[in-house]
Length: 393
Ligand SMILES: *Cc1c(COP(=O)(O)O)cnc(C)c1O
Image (cartoon, rainbow, N blue to C red):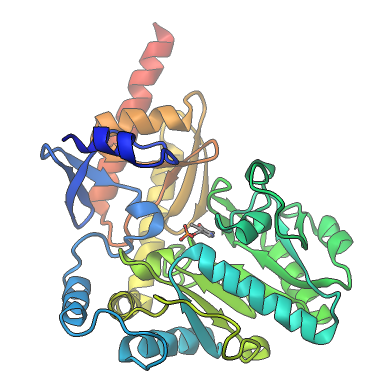
């Protein structure tokens, strides 16, 4: 039977899918069942950082798969211990707690923040997030998500969240009460439309947190692991978070999530306070080790170079109105076209893009090279040109 028909018949329709049955992939190209080839500027929504079939990643995960696939967290394993060491050394933080997804890593951050607050004052349980943010789809992380559209149907929602208008310092100070235990932010709002926060605003949040013993949580689920040109996007600014969450790019194709905990909160959770059956899975962790060993300072520099080139060329395209984002997380608006129409047209031309709100979102594998960037640019140029000719007709 046809996979599209089967999916439509038997899988809950919670996604708007493209009519492409993906069969295999290599590097930054995806192939469908008919052998049709697509250039991938989506990276599994920021997951396939090293692209597809990265030789060392495949080797490490295959080796681990043939040795030990899973063991409970009642025992120790080497791969997750190594991932934790690398993440802590890099961030100058102290502990890592492993889960399986971005939402779960944010759940950990929320639990740590609540318990930390509770230890000081039972009323100190509020968490501030930003308007237009996205933190996940569990009930608690939906509450953390500062978009009204996510706050329907599934109530009653988790209490104790409030939302500050992004980049509004005055609004921030109005919302910071004695009951606030943490502020959680994305450095570049991803699902919210590839919106980078202002440096001043980030600094003000970090300073406020420090002064008032409020935890600073950075959701790096999309921005982390090299996506913005630093291993973590917060490193573009002179700030030290208390909790950093990561998932997508760290997994590179297998599910993993992590909350990295700084000095203040390293021992807040004790035995029994949290757990995850699959958390720290040895196969996913073996892959994550390759990701972390590959995303070196030199590798990060290439991301900055590719980003500068891509942004400059996008800005020069006739019909482009604005370009936003950091590193290889880029949003584009157009003078006339809607981003979702561009995505459909690009698919016909053999290039896959994403949208985020009203923007075209470019999230290529980090291993993308100049030739592939030029291919994507040529596709956009062709679409914009034919659209303009339509307008002139
Ligand atoms: C994708 C995303 C999440 C949710 O991650 P899942 O793995 O889908 O649970 C959370 N926060 C941000 C910033 C994200 O981009």
